[in-house]
Each structure stands twice: as structure tokens, then as C-alpha cells.
Length: 68
Image (cartoon, rainbow, N blue to C red):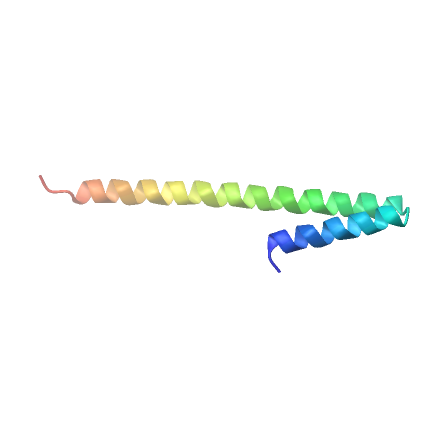
């Protein structure tokens, strides 16, 4: 399951719990959704930082290898 499908499933469950007037389950699902999206966003930000550092290192190595 990819992230979008997981979020859609949680949203469907939130809607269903609202239709059933189950506020506790609805709030818990919203909480889980928020935790997941926050974690995924932080992971993506971290991966972007790693890519930038690796790209910087590669660029510096390429510059060092240049012969004028």
C-alpha cells in the first residue's frame, strides 16, 4: 500500500465513524492520520537533506578532479 492509499483508507474510516457518531474512533483516526503525515513529511525532508549533502560532496569531488 502506498501512502496515498493509506490516507484515503483512513479518511474513509473517519467518514464512517462520523456517520456512526463514534467521536472517539473518529478522533483517534484523525490523530493517527496526523502522526503518519507528519512522520512521512519529516522523512521526506530528511531524505532531501541527505541528497543535497551527497550532491554537494559529489560536486566537490568533481571539482577536485578537474585538471586545468
